[in-house]
Length: 483
Length: 122
Image (cartoon, rainbow over all chains, first blue to last red; front, side):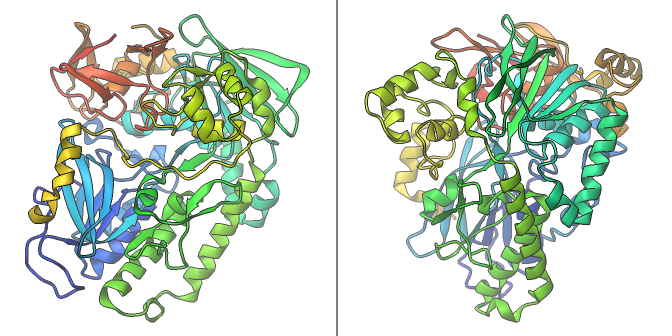
């Protein structure tokens, strides 16, 4: 799959929808399971579809692909359900796949439709893609919580370890500790072990069998969990619940971590600590949906079962803004199966809306809806089974960085609170966490929790760093004439 | 530059180094990422990191190539002089910012390495 050379469609009509010249019927941001599924549905129905992704290959995080340069005979060995990816890839029809496109802003156009502003490639060429309808399927990133030593080289997110392996065939380290909460820790640990790393332990801060009741209610998931358990055992990887990495240590880079036995709120028990040598820590506390684009467009959000913001959609994946759809983790973290199904549903809705027919008239059978309800129910149960315990704040010292970018330590956040900053926004203005390069994507949730709030939806007018020149050009609105 | 040797992109050179990589990993004998997926990488190329050659398999990111070569940090923070490298690995955290061919502030985890790239650490 390569980027199309001339992504802007010409005037050739196929009679679907009211398409202005040079405008896609549907632009999908994100080439993960949701985006690919939607693209296939819409393209097969005759719509002009473009899929934009910042990555160099389709698949998103879950189905992150190896570069062709590796000539891998068994690319599926690093994946769960690789055949599903192959099916999605082969069903894309004539959708244009625009890779290496980082979307930094989306706007509603003057006469309806949307302008999607991108930076393309390493050279960051500015490009604007015009769309009649927009599907946001931008996925999620790891949720991380600060702890002493978390900015030592060698400490990385669980997702980073997966990305290195799946996308680069590079092991995160030789001796790795995997820690955090949630079922994602299992594939991370088993992949690393299968690739030859020594996994010194998997430490689940929640209960070891938090998921058991939900998994038993879904035979497929129970089998999946058992398979991971078997593989961990085969590689002699210890998996322990009720334990958290509360500190990382090393002189300049990671050499060991402190693992503490924690109670149900994640407060360490006195004396229940052990030191484990490792060169790498892969840590993740679940996932945070990337909501920059829906927020820019003014899409309403709601709260997931754990209180985090998600894009609000109707049962056809329409957001509150006409012409904007969302699918996958954008609407709530639910995993690849649900993302793919939501992509299919969104694709069908886009087709129906483009043709001006009711969605009910399409093959959106009751089984799809039932399956979605089942998967969404499982996703909610997962969120409830793996909550973030309040006790993580007891791991912090005054000099523990909360914001990695602006190097704001916990002590300064406490000072801001003492000065009367009662909410996350005031803390940010006083102590400056979240004001750096990442714009609070990494520390935003921690700061909100330290303020005693649920994390708020993002308010970033710009989703990627962009030059002042490109910003100024946007003001001229020339892109509307170009496209 | 400092670091623990990761699972080098050894397959780019020869099968022998792939085995060595697995041995270094200390896991099951002979296990390596290359063996796992049956990779037979096409001939690789080099980039230079502060003048030192670092091998790359076509398609790897700058960050992955450096990490694989045991280079785990390539940036120092403004205030605390803290060393930084890969953290989120997917373009969100901006910790892995790197200078390539004089262009500053590229995310190493997203930037695909190209033959002849000159990477400068700070």
